[in-house]
Every structure is written in C-alpha cells, then in structure tokens.
Amino acid sequence: MTVTQPEIRYVLSKYLDRHPDEVDDMALLFHALNEGHAVASRKEFRIGHVTAGAAVVDQQGRALMIRHKTLDKWLLPGGHLEPEDNSLLIASLRELEEEAGIPWQQVVSPPAHDVAPADIDMHKIPANPDKGEPEHYHFDFRYAHWVEDAEVRLQLDEVTAFEWRPISDLPPKLSAKLAPVAPSGS
Image (cartoon, rainbow, N blue to C red):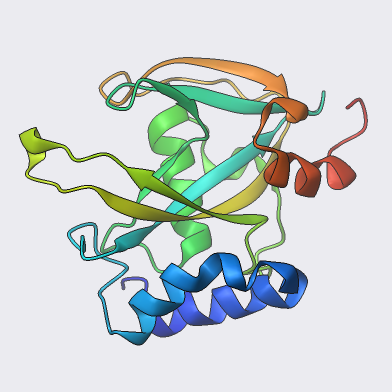
C-alpha cells in the first residue's frame, strides 16, 4: 500500500492543529494538493513532492545528522516515499534504517498512533541533470524518534558520515520543537 493524498492531507491537518501559526508556511504544499499533484511520487516536479525525515534523538539529547553524498550537506536521515510505505511515519522509520542502519525496533518513540510529525520543512532541491530532475521542493514530514544505545551503520552509497550533535545545531524551528521533549541529559 502506498501513502495517499488523503493521508497526506490528514497528517498535514493534524500537524497544523498543533502548529496553527504555520498555515501560511504550507501554502505551496496546499497549492500542490489542491491542484491534484501526485505529491507522494518522487517523479512529481511541477512544484515538488513529499519526503519523510527522521529527527533522531539519543539518551544524551543529541540529534543524529548524516552527511548526504549527493547534496554534500549535513541533514537528518530521510528521503523519498516508496510504493510499499503505508504511512508517512513508516516511511520515516524505513529511511532511518536505510540510511543509518537503525531498525524501527530500536526506536522507543513516538507512539504508533501519533500521526503528526514533529515538523514539516519545505526546502528547494537543486536541479540534477544526471537524473533528469529539475529544481523542485521537498515537503519533508519530519518525525521525532528516540533511541537508546543505537549503533549507526551508514548506507555508504547515499551518505558519507554521521555525527551526534546538540539539538541546538538543528534548524531553529525544529530544535525548538524537540528541546522540550528531549530525554534527560540534554
């Protein structure tokens, strides 16, 4: 089963229930949804498409960052939705395991019924002529995950390094959302 447009709308509405001050920030995503763009497809480039990210925090209150090979930037683990993903939360956990080698069984939160991500970030992705991809946006649904003693095993074809960094090193909007609920020790 794949992530559907109605699920994306539902998760977006749950997120905006918690963060009503961000409605205007979601204008491009609303536009794409209202125009019927297939935002769950990585091949949707008219405006962009939805991705799933993992904001992983360890017992010391540090966030996992990976060095993305293609973009040559430090980012959260995450990526494109796949046809077998049956929810955005599941896509986030799958990406965490694919890029950092941390299986969902080592994640101690969030509760399975919590469909709202910790953050939704919109960012521009540069054109990639090698893949035939024009410049477009990623609407990154970032889920908070807490881990205990997780061993990171990188997928070296996509990422080159990892670091556990203070939550304050994350983008300000995300760090503010994670800091109040980070495990003790942060």
